[in-house]
Length: 624
Image (cartoon, rainbow, N blue to C red):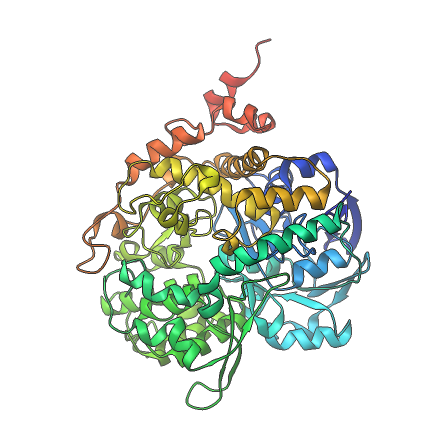
């Protein structure tokens, strides 16, 4: 077998036992790896009754066939589990952990059960050991990194949770690579890891990923590298934060909890301002040719010291414009605190903006906040709330549950401005600016996700799925079909574990070449796109089994009915229901958003048909 190490590591924390399990090549041909393969495991090994924070939940870490090779941006890994938000949960991260896991001899790790005391997992050269971790429980993710390297190997890579995950915050991330601050941030999977009392997974190895045709594969990489470098130049120059000013210009960057269309302070927190002030160096994940990561330093002033991973676009908006904070150094500190505590910066910023609005409306009072006045634009307030959420103290204990649950507990109309889909706070791109985001947020199985359907492709087109040119961003025509196609395309990247930021520079034919030369297979682009479609439908069926349908494919009222007063989005609101009809038709789902038996059979997912709701499953059953 080429491209894979040929096995996953199974860990039962209840029994304190670890063992190897081989991977069948025909299974890999169907699902590749990453979240696609993760969907297969999670569907089969959890049920609608599985408690996300109970020992029966399965916590999955997976790489893909290109990880550990020299294929550009092939350094990512996926984290998958039933989310504490109540449905399908996935997130992914870059850095070097995924690459090192394969060098240690494994394509993935599947963790079940729960330890009776904190532990960490040490994986090296095809061996695994469960070790006590009481001494590092409570230690943040930056400080636990050197501590565990001292106990294992100075060349090891550490994946860990911080205090937020230990204390089961639904905003908790799974972090890796220490001060480089790489995060599998979304869907609260750090809380799943905390519920298992698994502090960290430390990996090191020297094994080489087998490649079927290494010389030809290297030649293919050399041929495509110049194109990739040219088409991703803006991310290399300014990171994702370089998109701040263009996003603001078209009304894409949310302001004041999604209430304003313009803000005259974006230039103070932009990627360009970062490059001029606090940037120390660019950061490259394993095998990366883009280098969108930022390493920053704040050496003096009220927010010093800060040194390590700098804020990306989503964080700059979450802790910046969403809260009306225009101090770049304060946001850099907020980002570091989120990384140390192990918090998703998107959800954390959404929770803080929600709290600020609740205080403004008088729904929260100083009696609820231990006397802290929650004032818009005050960096000290933003930082205080980050600390409280990360440590689950004061009002942060409630906010750490996420805005859906916080609004439910607060009541008094708070649900009106708690912006989420399926309990997941919205990513920092406004569907009133681009229709594709409306459909993508409403339908993605983990909740309001901008990674499931790159809106960048709406603005620029993607020939691989039939869009040679961009579509008008606020024209709903064709957007349902387009989102379905791009979700499948993104699902392919998520299964290969290749970074989506390479999309502008790498076409599907390049992925086909990379994969075939690495694995020795002979797959076509059409086959790969079907793998992406299979993953999309399997994740949907996971949620269908939980009782979800069209009624869950919704957007917050503010997005659908409140027009922005000014800015690049104009007064537009997306016609979601019309686009959903088109989306379901393109997917081969019925009017309730349920995959049809015919669609499931076409994709080789007929084994999920018994989980279709009531009459649908009975109608699909073979006659006796």
